[in-house]
Length: 114
Length: 112
Image 1 (cartoon, rainbow over the protein chains, first blue to last red):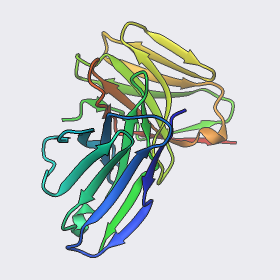
Image 2: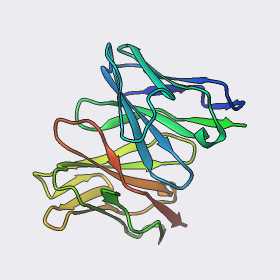
Image 3: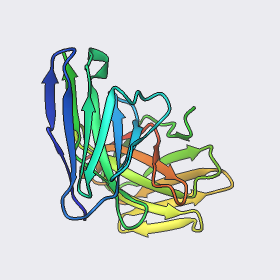
Image 4: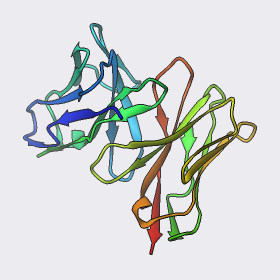
């Protein structure tokens, strides 16, 4: 099946700094990618839809200026958490759609803000 | 507003028996449903899906049933194996839109 990678898998940063998370589709092209966030023991919540060559579409309640998304190529989308705070600590997962309606998910990035 | 719900946070089953995971949804616009398996600190892995034009889809040990009138779907795993122990999420989408709405997850534990 299709493979989606994320980098880094785990990152610790200090409050006030910015962190960039990369999502790559390794063996297929993805004009659209999705970014999710998961808090412990909770469901995956869609944050935004990343569109290659255009602006991302954010879900209600997600701050655009805080979670910057760039989809610069057909295989790469990045999520930058700007001015991170402890409440941004979470598990961030990206996905890319397959040929049917299934999504292929990356392994996730655990962000800890101290 | 939780549009996709999994009311059982956990389920324990013995190896070899059937595991039945349930999922309810409220949005009648949903017409494609998927089940994912997730281990801690990993991304979800796609298991099986079903379109609203069907009421059953089978793939090996996994079968998904859809009851549109009740807005309910279920995942059956037969026979259950210890390796099936994980958190299972159901998800739903509207045709033409690739966004998925996830349920809250059910932790399945299959004991030897």
